[in-house]
Each structure stands twice: as structure tokens, then as C-alpha cells.
Length: 243
Image 1 (cartoon, rainbow, N blue to C red):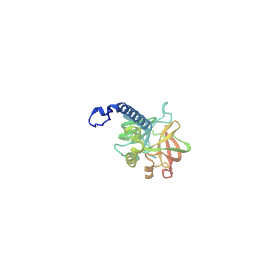
Image 2: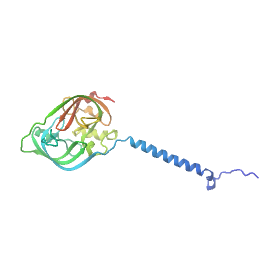
Image 3: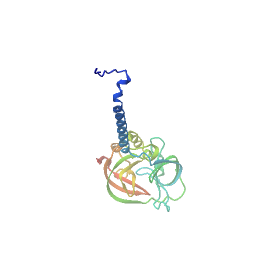
Image 4: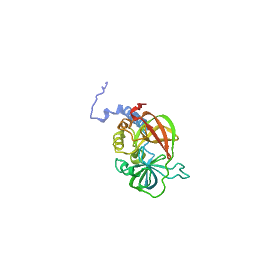
């Protein structure tokens, strides 16, 4: 007598003819999920490269434009002096403390953060220091067209990770509005570095239009100068265009 197949949902015997198919589908789905995760992960920027570097004492000349920095004395390791960007605690800069010390020799203490060759000091104390204050030499490297992203220097150098990209846009805008020095992260190196202090076309503080450039890659035209061992990119951020 011919027996018809009858499906009984609660019986494990009903699934036996499908067990190999179900197993193969689970393996395919697991492999596809792993491949998708790998593909998505490979497209995310490496959040590393920025770190706290411990408590620091920095002595040198105070330069306040476009943002406060200290340029240390020239040395064999840094013939033009080493430039250290300055930021305050929280989401604010140190413009008020730095302004009366412009052009003077100063001593600053605080915690250091670093990414690549660019350093920042999160200032605890800032005061005049006895001694001569040689004027840091600047060198004009000409006009450049650069693509990149405006970041707040504090987070992108190591305080937060990754500290750039669309997910960091709101935080970057708050920091930059508060006076934290902006760092331009170029898509291609200039003079061996992708990280540059940024100012407006006249060498002053960036206007509110900078907010459009955080978290996204845009193209800027401007001049590049050296200040100590740091590059300064001067650009009209309002004239930037999408890449």
C-alpha cells in the first residue's frame, strides 16, 4: 500500500528530510554575514594613531594666530622649532589666557595628545617665562588645492576615537565653536603630513562656515605655510566645494 507523506508540525520526524538543506543554508548565511561584516569594517577609518602622551611642560614663544600655539626653541631635532597646539579643558580653547602673552616666551603645563607628527597640549597652567623670545620663522609654500576634512584638533589627535567622520560632526562643531584649534586632515600628504593647523584665508580664526566642512570631505583652495615644524593651511571655508 502506498503511504502518503503527512506533515506534523510538532513532530521532529517532519524536519528530517530537510535537515541537510537547513544546515547548508545556515552555513551560507553565516559566511555571507561574515563577508558583509568584513566589507563594512574595511571601509571604516582606522581609529588608531592618536594617543595621550602624559604630563608635559612646554617652553617657547606664544603665537596666537590663527590659534594659540607654542613654538619651542630650534634644536638639532627641530631646526625650525617644534610647534605645539594649545587647547583648554572640555570643549574650549585658551584664547583668553594666550592673548596677553602673544609674542612672549611662556611656560605651559598640561596633558599631551599626539597624532603623527603633530602635538597638542591640554593646558593646566600658562604663564610668562623669563628669557628671549625669538620670532618663529614662517615659510610660504604657495597656493594649494586640497581635499580633506576639518576636525577639531583635540579629538582627532587622540582625545576621542576616531575623532573624525560624520559620527563626530556634532562634537567637532561644539569644540571648534568653543575655540579648540581646527586641524585639517588632507586626503593626500603635503610635505609628508596629512595633518595641518587651519585658519581663514587671512590667517585668522575660522568663521562659523567651518561647520559645513566637519565630518565630510570637501575641496579647499588656499595657501600653505610653515610655523615651526607644523603646516598651516589658510583657506576660505565658505568657498569650499564637495569633492
